[in-house]
Structures are given as structure tokens and as C-alpha cells.
Image 1 (cartoon, one colour):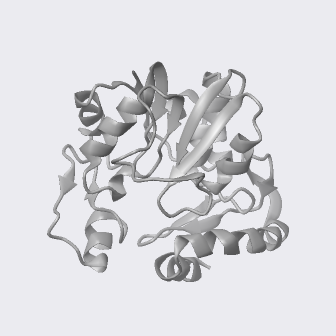
Image 2: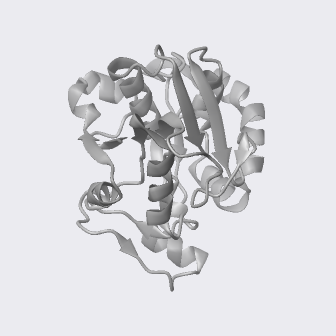
Image 3: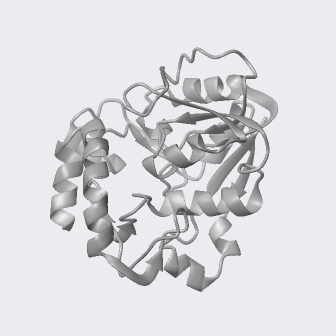
Length: 254
């Protein structure tokens, strides 16, 4: 299963993978049903989760029902338990919308919900994150998760996110984290897909962020709270929900 999923991730275009996943999910849910692990996003439980990873496969991390990963489940718990995302009227912009969230957020009556991306079939607005077609101070809440590591000019993208966020608004800007690394590393001369995968962790990443990521966000104007939400959960919850202990959620304010 691990080698097959790795091959699919690296060979099949993402829009095609998204469509295929809707066909496969019912079979996976039936095959893996059990009560050992639970996906907090939809409440379904399984005897195990699926492996996932472009280069290094992580075992038991991909939910067979919502197709969520560790970061999605952690973010869901944070939004549910610590914010008014599911109750307050909010104008929301969601970049590269994840399948785990898309229909659930779309169906939230309190949300004025817009999705955007250059390639995703789930995007309402096809747009370049470095040149967004939205007015200043447009959105109460922005979700932009695991996007910036793909963008050559990430500072320009951050400036655009800051520009369109309303004063008092919130932006959650998750990225792949290497908290052992102090400084972000980027080398634009590395263009070979295999080299990028080895150095940056994925063939279409252009950098690997270090602990300075939060200060980079601050440098464009954001006030940043580094939320270690897993530290507020029990060991049983971290295990049952298959979370990555110590992952930091960058919660940004304007």
C-alpha cells in the first residue's frame, strides 16, 4: 500500500487524484473500519489509517474517510474548540482547499466562503497568490495551508495575504515544518524534481522553512501567535486522532 500511494502521488496529477479519491473512499472505509483510531473531522473510526508521503512514507496518517492528514485534524480541533469559526458570521478565503474541509466549510451557513487556486478543481476563483483579484481588507478569515512552500516569491504572497485580510482578521498559514532548522533554506538553482524532493521534501517545493518562518510573517506586518495546540491535548487524543505532537499552528492577525 505504501509503495502504491507513493507512486500515485509522484506520477498522477493532483486534480486527477482528487477525482479518483472520491471513487476509492467507500471501499477504503469498509476495508479499514474498526475502533482503534478516530477522524475528529467526520467522527469515523478505523482499525488503522493509510500511509502517506511523496518521499518518506509516514505510516498510519491518512484518514480513509475524510482523506485528512495530521495537520488537517489538528487544525480542525483548534478551529472547533478555540475559535468562533463555526458560529460567527465570517467572510472566508480558502487557498487550495483541502478535500477534508471543502464541503464542510461550504455547507456552514455562517460562512461567506470563497476558494481560490491556480489549478485546483475545487477553486471558485482561479488566481495567482502573488497577484490576487481582491480588494484591500476583504476577508475576516484566511486559510492558506501548505501553499507558500510552492511559491518562488513567498514574501510577495505574504504581502498579498496581509493586504486582503481585514483589520482584526485572522489568517492561518501552515507550512511543512522542520523546527530543528533555524533558518529557511531556498536555492533557486535547484530545478530538478528529484533533487527538490530530496532537499525540500517534495518535488514541487522550492524551499524548506525553519524556525524563522514566524518572524518572516511578522516582517510583512502580521502579528503572529505560535500555537502548539497538541500540548493542550491528552496523550490519548494525540494517539487516537493520529496527530503530530509539537506541530505549530501559525495564527496570524492584522
